[in-house]
Length: 395
Image (tube, rainbow, N blue to C red; front, side, top):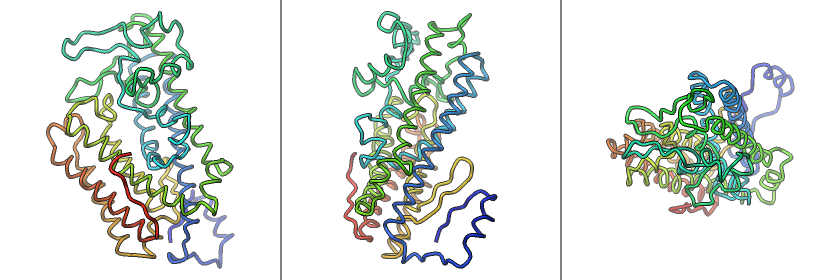
């Protein structure tokens, strides 16, 4: 039976309170206990996503106030660090939860892609290597005389799915710029933000835009997390005794859809076939390999009921694996093996992804196949505990 591994200072207190109680065996673990633990993991994971986004916010504010090469590097490192917990939260999608089941479309505001850079800022024509300066909100002084949260959100998505003006990838573009390089990510200079002697133009507006979308990211993550608080309306409904079986099926469907439709499909198969950088998930920073890895970590977290926080604390309680083990130990062993195989296959794809899709097609095919096998085994695991869950080909 798994336990909560807590900071050292709390261990003595807990030992004094728990002397004779025996831990429940695998056979006594209930659907309710698994769903409750899942909700705890979701809350902790979103809390980490917010903390790292706030660190990014701090770095962005300092950089915009006094642009420097080191300041831009600090922002990039903070963005990369913020992606680690957020990507793991993607395992909580695809069943109409708070992240993507509301009219607010928080997932679209937080992590939408692919992104057409020209809706935000200047771009370079890769054929002519010529700056196209008069494009994007930042450079459109007539259409956007002032840049505010309201003006950005009003036109976000106005011109179609690639008209993405907010979220992690908008921030990514503003930090790295376009990536035309085989040996590195984008090389946007920090001088794009210098208001005296800077490069490009509208540097102050660029800084304003960067700050606004970073603030929005924090705010939207906080809105999602609020629904998973112990007092949150969604969590209360999700963990209610009458809904536990439905919730258990939903959380399994969520990781199944992330596995098959999103990760192996939209994020891997599409770019493998097109070989177009625009189909790469984090195309400006060359961080897509980590996107793959940490999405898979999030899937694994949900199945085994365990999440390692950014401070090293571990939330560890009853997982789906415990339920499956009690009903069909072989199915659980196979599920763990499939998770391990997919993890290894993903890690075997060499970064950067925009080069791997041209030179390492076999590694891509192996990872995609491993993920699809993983999704199929999730159906077997769900059926073993009496749930009729079939993972669709697309989301």
